[in-house]
Length: 376
Image (cartoon, rainbow, N blue to C red):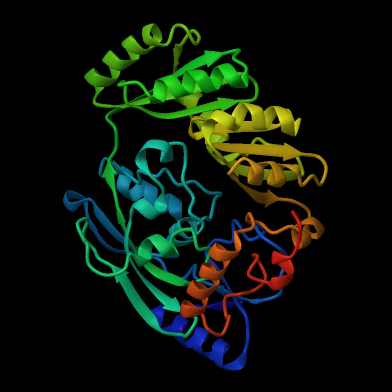
């Protein structure tokens, strides 16, 4: 494993690989190393690129090196009464760079936006071995191409981020979770849709397979209390709401946003119109699932190697991501949904612009012609 000490060091590593025709896999904490197809590539660790470059709580801007552990970043901003609003999550050891590169967002994403919406700027190394800077260290910036949005969720296929500037927000003074129990998926979706569409400013909504629906209300204490008092009456037609302690609510929100409780050997993450979530659960025929984003994200688990979720998602205008499976299945079925020919061609052109010698095209994703040809 190669270890980069700074951006210049990483640029030299990438330039050498490009000149020699070698493949490099970028890795932060390695917590998502099994996502995508098995591959053979030289691993470059970015875990040594740690530390806070600049943090101005008054300006709500944080600049941090990519290898800094996510938990440390969250603790730093929490100490100032602030938060990463897109609610990133990860296993112990996950880094902020890897989290943003994977586009990870939690339950608050439905109202606060995703990682790409909070990434203001970055420093990165392209597949040419060149250091480049994109965006800015200010919230209001309208100049140039919005490369940060392109890099967030790119999974290291365009370049290696070495430094990130993130917008942070004040943490809510009070957060309350209201729950309804015993609802079927259809009824749970109706409740969540009504809650998110109300003027109560519900910031997140989820539903667990065991029949628990979660609604989150956050903000200043008087406002939260008033909204929590009004919601049970406004939503009475959909079910009875009860307030629970946040210590009890936290693991349930974690279950909904991460899919960690899914036990099947084959795990899928589905993004689709929320109204289709109950139908999707029913037709897939599994009892191992969790619903987040008001139904816009589903976690599904299966004991067998089914490709049904991807076919159904494609038919319904959604996307299915293969999150977990044995190596032989991941070698045949791409992690991402197949793109239309036009979109696939555009993605290929963008990747070639950043990485003309395919240094980062390790075969992990469907950038390979063989993977694109797989019927899934």
